[in-house]
Image 1 (cartoon, rainbow, N blue to C red):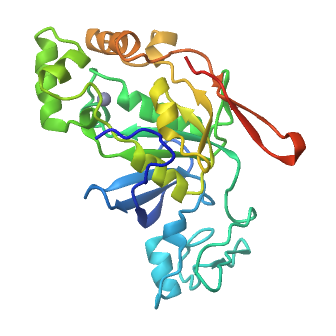
Image 2 (cartoon, rainbow, N blue to C red):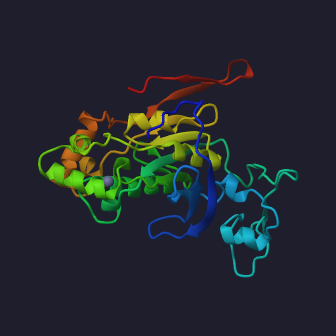
Image 3 (tube, protein in one colour):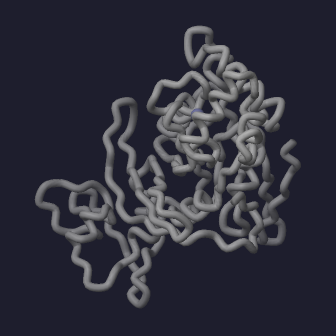
Length: 310
Ligand SMILES: [Zn+2]
């Protein structure tokens, strides 16, 4: 089921089950968040750049829990070290989290918790073939790597990076939501001459069966309000919005590496056909950054002007 960005739509309930710091081979530490939800049994993830981007459900105080319980599930501030006893205070950095005494909810203090700023975000759907099996049929692995790289850097060419902050929401919806088995059948139809869209339709699937409502719910749980969305897909811009709490303030394009550099990126006849289909059949835009909202504050109130995106 594909849900629209209708503000009256009820979002899925999500709960962050655990968070852990992951040192990476290529850049800054990331914080991997694992989510449960009330729509499916899949383990959706948020790959978070920045220790201070905090899941509200993870940090919510729970009845009867100890500081050790909080550290084990990842609800701590600063950095863990051998012998640490307090989750809510990091003695090394001097940072302390505060909670509402009656509800146990995290108090959002800009000194300890990321809030309000524009945040680089990618909503990424799992692609086993492209991310793990070295597939040159699509550019998912390249886009995933590129998104992470942009979150770590201050700038790359014309694009302002995340400077160490950002969120990749990683949704377990393989093959535009049709599952890996059906995706493999679609690949065989493509080898028989169909394009990506035709192959899905021949298998009685929608051209795109993905549902981004979980992505919106996860971003809201992480306290993200203003999204700089990394995508070439104009539909994703509306799918990430949830007024009045979640706004897309900018679309940041992801130009395939092979288009700008002959030595880098994926070079195959399959990827050229795949990207052509994205542009010609699915309306993807491949162009420079596009500002979507202009924010002005007349009479002390905030007005958001939405411009047409196509
Ligand atoms: Zn892919």
